[in-house]
Image (cartoon, rainbow, N blue to C red):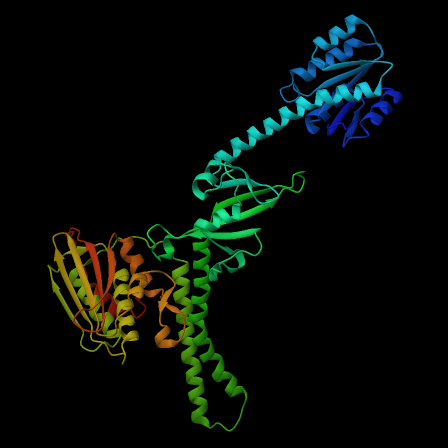
Length: 501
């Protein structure tokens, strides 16, 4: 008969008794360990958690009773079956041992077939109790974790599914179903290596990505929920089942998308100036019949590219290493805003900008001079950059509506696409593809404008002009009270400081 026990821990006994039990257990998949002392047996039992404990005695029954008491009083060992093999065949000794919590008592001479059957009968309910305890622990854990967990059989049918798997993913053992087919009904599955391209179909159901569009059929990817489906084969399981674990990874994939955008952005920002720097130098090093004017031109191109690269690196550095914009202690008035706008327009060589203010000049806004200057500089620079002839006509209209200050900056360049308008304030997004052939996106400038406005409690919105080509930027800020201190015109300070920006 096959003994179903996996682990047997025995107290050191005579060689004949140990050999007998080894022969009885040889037909089963059993590992047997022997302890030389009671103290070591308790220590081994706590560490190894055997399925059965074998104690032996020949003359001193009290030592066995004491050891049984220690085992039954331990909260971790109390339910492990104990058998006693003894040469004492007295009624009083048997009753004392059984009363101490022993499950069975064998007396010499031993009948190996009888012992084998009695051992099987002892271990069968013990294995059932262990299996039920493991199931209860599994249910307790799986119902508390915030992800879908299911067990699938060899044919990939669901044998068990926790509440999350049943409610969110439709996996249930109440009816026969293949887990991957059930997921395919409600989700789009793709291999993890191809998730960017959203390749439909599954070739290796080991590590999958699945996503679900929001209800209503919208194509807005930002609202799409992503899940990672992992399949773990239970190699030691005799039924060769697998565990299916589904975890939401929306935030992780959004972060990965941002990192990819950062990589493309940095490449885009640095590639052109790097080529302009290295290309002319390679031509000069190659020698040839170029005259002095040609060499000067190449050096001039290389120097201009080096300056542009320095500016690009500085822009990236300032953006990435300035995660939070501190609120400026020094506030600007609307009169200061006019002066800063005029100064920035002059530095950008804008032709005759129209700057008007329909509000008291002493109205204070929650922006410092550096912040407001940077806003105008970025808006004017983009106006020049995206105008077909790089000579835009720009207007700045400042007005006050109760406690709200509205600053509207308009140019007569080109319209932005509806999708670009939605993302102009998003970091790493660019829309230069039609102009430069490079990647999509506006980069960091307008994102920095949005960050400055948000840090001051303001808002920014981008629109296409309705009366002609061009962009309309609407800045909204809360007006604050003006203190009585006399202020030096901020525009004068900036005019005297070439590094103000």
